[in-house]
Amino acid sequence: MAVTETIDNTGHPTDASLQIAADGRLRHLLTLRDLDRQIITGLFDQAETFLGEPGQPGTRRGTLRGKTVANLFFEPSTRTRASFELAAKRLGADVLNLDVNKSSQQKGESVLDMVCNLQAMQVDVFVLRTAETGVPALVARHVAGHVSVLSAGESHVSHPTQGLLDAFTIRRRLGRIAGLTIAIVGDVAHSRVARSAAEVLLNMDAAEVRLVSPESLAPEPGTVPPGARILHDIEEGLRGADVVMALRIQKERIANPDGIPGTAQYFADYGVTCERMKLAAKNAIVMHPGPLNRGVEIESRLVDGPQSAIVEQVRNGVAVRMAVLSAVCRSSS
Ligand code: CP
Image 1 (tube, rainbow, N blue to C red):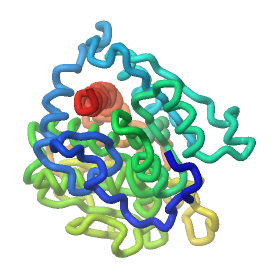
Image 2: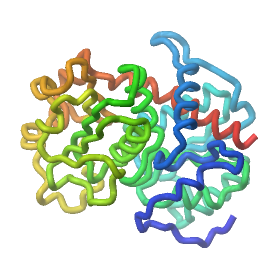
Image 3: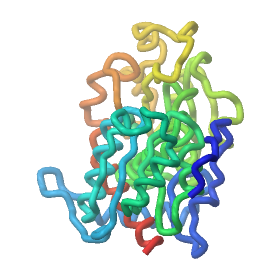
Image 4: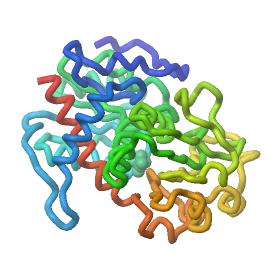
C-alpha cells in the first residue's frame, strides 16, 4: 500500500465503478450513484431476512465469522456507528472501534498509514466516516484485494447506507418506491443524506424527488443528482408528497452563519409540522435520518406520531448494514 498519496478533496465524485469487483459483485460501498438496481434490490431482499421483531433478540448469523470489521469514525455518530457495530457482531465478526481522537493520527499519522497498519492486523472491512471528500475512495484504491471499504458518511457528498435504509424503509412502509413523490426538506446544501437518498430513489423510479430549502441552504447546481427538483417554497414542496424527510441544519459544516435563519425563524418558515403535513398525500409518512432537533426542523408531535417512520429507519439500518457487510464479505471470500 502506498502511503504518500495525498487525499483528493476537490469534491469530484467517487468513481462508482471502483466499488464493483471484476465478477460484478459489490466489493466496496462508497456511493449510490449508478449502483446497479439488481444489487440494490438484492441488498433489500437480504435485509428483509435480517429484520427482527421489537423485543426479540436481534437476528444472528455466522456469515462474518473469522472476519474483522474496523469502525473508523472521524466525525461524531450515534446511529451509524452503533448500527455497523451491531450488524457486524450479529454476523459473527470481530469488531474494532478505534477512537481516532486518541489514535496516532493525533501525532501526524496519515489515514492511509493508519489503514495500512490495521490491515496488517488482519482487518477485512473498514467502515469510514470522514469530514473530507475523497477519503473512502482513496482508501479503497489502496487496500489489499480481499479488503472492503464501506462509507459511513463522506463530508456532504455521500452516505450510502443511510440512503439504502431510507429507501428500504419507504419500500416496507408504502410497499413500493416507483411512482412516489419524496420531499426532502431542510439544509440540502450540506446534506450527504439528501444526495444519497435522491440517488437511490430516482434510480428506483420515484416519480419525483424534491429538494426543498431556503435559498441560503440550497445546493450548488450540479451537486445533486440529475432529475432531482430544487424548490424553495415549502408548501409547494410538500403538496401531494408521499414521503416527507426533514433534515437538520448542519452547523458543523457552515463556516459563515450569516444569512442562515435562526432556529425560531427556521421552524416558522421551513419546519415540517402537523399543519403542513396536511398538504401531503393522505397516507404520507415522515422520515428523518437523525440526529433530530425537535421544534427546529420538525414538530415534536410529528416525530412520535403515527405518520413517523423515524424509529423504523433506525431499526432497518441494522438489517441493511448486515446485508451490505454480507455482500462485500461474500465478494471477498
Ligand atoms: N443518520 C446518521 O448518520 O446519524 P449519526 O450521525 O448518528 O450516525
